[in-house]
Image 1: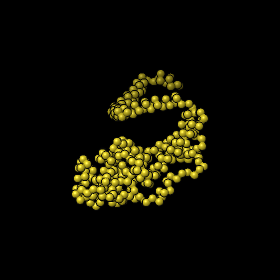
Image 2: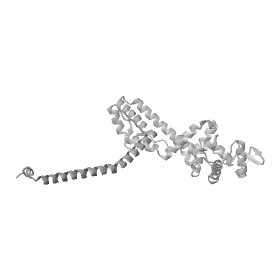
Image 3: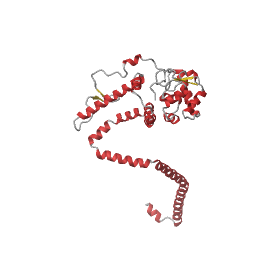
Image 4: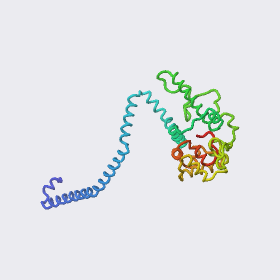
Length: 319
């Protein structure tokens, strides 16, 4: 006999019991769902509040504005570039990433920061005469800097010639090898030495010193028994005293603070240890004071001013 036939002949009491069990089961399911909703409600509200707060923070920081601007830039790049240009971009992504990594090294960032500080304070720099420029040319650091600059100029000239002579629509730079870390031009002639040969015979510069060893100049004037050179530096660093430092600072219109004195004391000790008067870069790296803060303490010619107040010779080739 089929189940339907059995249910038709099932006593009414059994049918009611079965219906009651089904109703109880549904009621239990409903109760559990309500308990889950009750328990998860506060959690959901907390999560929504945290997400809303985080989104508001990102909006205040400008992430969404940046994202919209980035989308516009990408849209212009994609819309204005043909398939060949996009393929070239994809092919050179690795080199672009490597170049970015090199440019963001701490040494490179320090170089950019120093260059920016010098440009920002350009009006405070003392003019360099032709004689001063010729004298600076004898310094190993200046010679190495010129070697780097000339090598960069050579690469820029070659790149300009290559771009000028490249056929329209051609990609890549003829005459280069791009399989290494950087694309480099193939050259058959011997490369120019990065440092002129005479630098090898130059006197060794103490570790950490930027300028060559300096020595006091001849006495040009005498004030209260203390000799000074023609440019205002102590002729005999042994005559230096803290009282003399304070008097020279007062005459120069500088109100010394603990930060001023710490930098002056560092310069004097560094000269005693190395035989070289530290320049701006050495003052910054050795004392831990940033170049910007040094210019903030000593507004005009900080390298010379610190040396003068420290009773040490003028830094050679320094501003």
